Length: 223
Length: 394
Image (cartoon, each protein chain N blue to C red):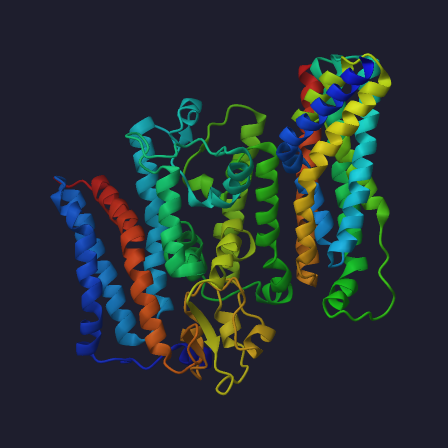
């Protein structure tokens, strides 16, 4: 009976993830697209980066699952610290985007030129994993609407392991929607593409920073 | 200075008067056909507006045929379009609701007129969530004839014919900055534009990706809500709190900076070339458009006049050496008119370069000017009859 309810809840989480996947795609897209655009051309390298991003995102999900189960369904609904958390996460996301945008062009321009011709000149590219991991984790704990729905459901489950499984299956359902991002691997890498990706990251950093600060100001002055 | 101005002047009679009139005749008939319904309307001012536009558009086309120049005459039309659009639009808003700000009730009821600038932002939400993130109605209603379906249909039809030339023959915003760019006698920040042009022309692509992704993420037309410089001269959300005050501040700052001050200083269309995400989106349609500008390498002496004359920095040394423009060329004809050696030519894809450039130009102009008359002409007529309404005439 327990195994049956376990699998039913896993199935429910998977379906929830699949159904709300487009919203996850839209929410994470602004962070994933510029990040992937600066990676060297090729689907294999992109798959590796996307897997790292998703792994970090899963870690974020599981951390949230633990918190949701321990604190209860108050987190998504009316927990007073929610605004602080959202504002803080958005400011951290903005900072991460600025840091990685500032680092991209110096490391990637030479790579972008050479990979297009399948010729390696100079040193081999240094693949930075920390960017995918940091951005993946921060988007993983970003409180988007489907995530909150999953949080409410996970908080109602009897065991912590069930909450973790629920979020794992929810993650698996949403992860399917990330596959189209691999098509960006076919985009030819030129210095122009890298520069555009960097600008997009800076613009997004502005947006997340503005949004995070607005939330915090709103919370401070209006309660 | 004298050598530059003489370089820009073409022979006074490129084509005889008789042939020019003959070539203009189809366009005159088309203008009459387009504006005939206006004469059935009762108002005298509408009649005057329609007649003025028929004469104006026909005269400009005649001058294009007669002189062989495109840019100068097109610019007169385009600047008139840019300045008369807000006149008609604001007058209609003030007559209807007494203010340029959009009341919340209008947004909720879906009565906001659709602006083509939003088009790239609505694609992803429409595809994934089957939702149009714009407070307008899909089909035309009595209170909002400028519905989403009508405006997108119109834009798409024009884009198939014009490609990126939309930005220099149909966009009713670009003319404002082209007007300010035309005022200054000399360009100031020339070195700045030359030095940073290659980076600056990437910004519209970054803004395009930014607004498309973020609009999908937050389910709001981000460009309209936060980045449109032309909100300052059309309609904008009413200032009710700090957020809307910041929005209004951004609109005004962008308008003053990118549409007034920088075009005046640089003599370039800075908003179009260095900011507009819709322009970047429109560039993609240059790939499928039949017409383009090419450079005859046998005649080109790499003098750089074409690059200096381009209002949106759509030419680079490399692209000219390859005999092409960049993807963001809006086919305004400035480089063709500026070229002393006739190396810059109009070209119909699939034909040999510089084989029959004037034939390619004529084909392009017939299609484009006909649509400009239909689309922009009605905007001009509206602006003219609004202006006449302000005059103390009986």
